[in-house]
Each structure stands twice: as structure tokens, then as C-alpha cells.
Image (cartoon, rainbow over all chains, first blue to last red; front, side, top):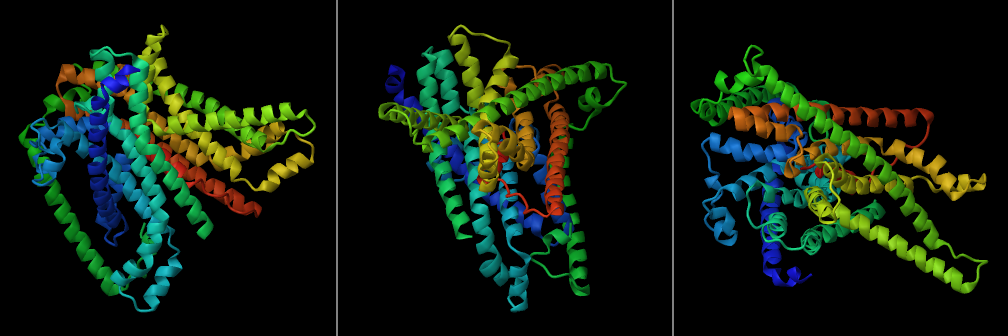
Length: 235
Length: 322
């Protein structure tokens, strides 16, 4: 078990890097997912078709394939994902600014993949609002924006927050894949590194890595359970 | 399609229809231009549309065509084998786990009256401990990434001198995760049933085991069928993780092909299309079953089945991951 103490910095570093990926990917996926959800509920048919196509494609494709696409497709498009070297952010999240593009590629893949699920969570929230609510708001003379802001979105937010949380939990778990795509030093790659290259005993390393992920997923899951129970009572 | 969005909009009048039409045309043109300049042009400049790269995959007269598709077929067969084995195993284990958790939960509520006091306390303590242990196991394996369970299985088993084919590592890794998810789906299905079901079963003299087997489980399966089918999609997608432990599933075969043909984008497009086709039909099946189920219920005049817990299904779907 001494590896847990000797190599604590490796575990802590891996945890920190995984957390960075998760935070960045969650923010990106929420933004892109919200845009997609707007597309999918917009009144313009071609935009709706684009949103639907996007969701169907990315929901039915393994994340592994998306990662491969990011790693091979983006260079073919002539991009090293340098647009992610955002000046202030990359001093906080240092991996964004490094010359090796794998962190950025993995981030893009995770965002693209998760956005499809975020979009579905948001859209199902909007669809869960009873049509009578929006109709009543319109008949009161609220404009489209007022209708969204005061009537539809507050209610849809309640219906989508639990599914959104589950999507984020799933994303945290999916982020374990980036360690197998050239991102050095995250939790899953540390597991590989410590057991195969540095020859530490397997069980303690596995326990340490598992704790790293469980710290992120279990409390979030418990929180969601409580939220869901509270909402079930409130309704 | 247009009715689906009617929550937010009134039925459009002539003016609104005109605006919609015009903005549709503008949007289409903008999208086409954007796709041309941002995707088609850079790809074409790099010669990604040349027959040299696409030929082995789409041109039947190409010398490598049959060989390439033989390999892809081999990969598909391996993917399906792993997926089928994993889903069957996780259904079996998941059902057992769900039954175990339900039984333990009812055991913890029992007072064991009529036994000597120490024995009763012992049994109560034992059932509480077991219940807690299964709960912790479920939480732990639900919270771990599937990549890691597969990786741990493939790395951990040889440490104890047990070694299998990589197929079995993949199947075991997938089963560990998915059986827990399926157990939770079934358990919430059984707990969501009206209490009268179990009470009526007890009243006609069924034992708890019989109640679970004949009354609760069949109904839970029925209600949760859509969630179970979407879990199938998840398993099918997750088999692609086999490349980590160098199991020769479709994606790994794709990597080998790329090693020879040197056309990554084309091969991945084909493989992605295959995955999307399979999973899209499965999700359509899930939707169809869900519609059938809710219709069947209504026509008998019963209440619609409670929807599966949102957190559970969407997390399962989201984990659809990987």
C-alpha cells in the first residue's frame, strides 16, 4: 500500500488534471449543448434538422470514435486546435497552451460528444413544460422573450437539472478515456504508468485511482438523488 | 416535426410562414457555404476525397476491397459477440443483484420475532451489514468509468494467475459496470410498482421469493424495457473500448487497416456509420417499445407506468458513452 503514500503526488496530479478536463469539458458541453437545444426547438426547419442530425450522429457513435476523429481529423483539416489557447485560461489550465495538442483534441472530442446529451436533457426539459403554460403566457400578451424568461425556462430548468447532472457524471466517467489518447498524467494514464512502466503492485494503484474518480462521481450522484427526491415531493 | 415545437409557438399565420420560409432559405444557404468553406475545402485541399483513399472501402473493383471488408466483417462479428455476451451476462447478474437488494432490504425491516433474542439480533445485524455491503458495491461500480473496470480486469486478473482471452476481459469488465446499472434500473422498476401488487401477492399466500419472481420482476422488466434497450446501445458502444486491451473489435480492426492503407478519416467515417446505423435502429426500437407499452397500458384502462427515474436512465444513456 506504500505506493499510495510514496506516489501521492502522482495521484493528486492525476486527479487535478482529470478535474481540469472535466471542468473545461463541462463548460464547453453546456454552451454547445444549449446552442444545439436552441437549434432543435427553433421554428426554422433547416436549423432543426441540423440539430437533430448532430444529436443522432453523436449520440449513436462511441466516444472512442469521436476521439479518433479529433486526433486524426483535425490535423487533416489543418488545425492543431490552437484556437483553444485562450490567453487567460491557458495560464490557469496550463495544458491548454502546451505544444502537444492531445489535451485539446481530447477536450474537443469530449465536448462534441457530451453536447449531444446536454442538448437532449435541455430539450426534454422544455418539452416537459405543459403546453398550457406557454399558451397562457401568450394569451396574457407576453412577448416570446418574456414567455421564455418568466414562464418556460424556469419550469424547464427544474425538469432538466437532474438529467443534466447525470450527463455530467457520465462525462466525468468518460473522461477516463483521454488517458488512452495521449493525454499524459491524468488519472487513468497514471494507472497505466504506475502499474506497467514503474512496476508497482496493481491493487493499491487501482484503489487509489478508483478513489480519485469516486470522489468526483459519488457525491454528485448523491446530490442528484436528493434533488430528484425533493422535486418528486414538490410536484 | 412542426407539431413537436408547438409548446413555444402559436400555429403560424401567413406572415410568420413567410418569415419562416425566408429564414429557412437563408439558413440553408449559410449552412451550405459554411460546410463548403470550413469542411469540404480544407479536406479537398488535402486530397481526402481522392479515390486512392476511399477506393478500398467503397469501390468493389478495387483490389483490396474484399479483403478490407472481410476484416471489417471479422471485427463486426467480434464486436457483436462481445456485446451479446456482455448484455446476457449483465442481464443475468443484474437481475440477481436486483433481487438480492430487494430481499435484503425487506430482511432489514424484519424483526425476527419468535427466535431467541441473541439470534434475532445477530440476524438483524447480518442482514443490515449485507445490505450495506451490496449498496456500497453498487455505488462504487456505478461510479467507476467502464474504461477503468475493463482495464482493471485485464491488468488485475493476470496478477492472480488467471488469464483469459481478451474477449473475456472485455465481457467481464462490461458486465461489472452494466449489471450494476441494470440492477438499479430493475430495482427502481420494482420499487416503483404500486404497493398493492406485493400486498396482493402476499395475501394469496405467495412467499417473498415467489412474489419477486412471479409478480414484481415481470412487471419491472416490462416497465423498464425501454431503459434496458438503451442500455443495450450503451453496451454496443462500449465494446469499442476493447482496443485498450487489444481485443480485435471493429475499431481495432479499423486501426489495423489504417496502418496498412493510411486513410484514417475514411476508415473512421465508415466505422462511425456502421455504429450509428446499429445504435440508431436500437434507439428507434426503444422508442417504439415505449410507445407500444404506454398505449397498451392505456387501452386496458390502467394508469400509465411511472417513467423510469430520470437520473437513472439518462445517466445510463449518457454513459452511453464511451
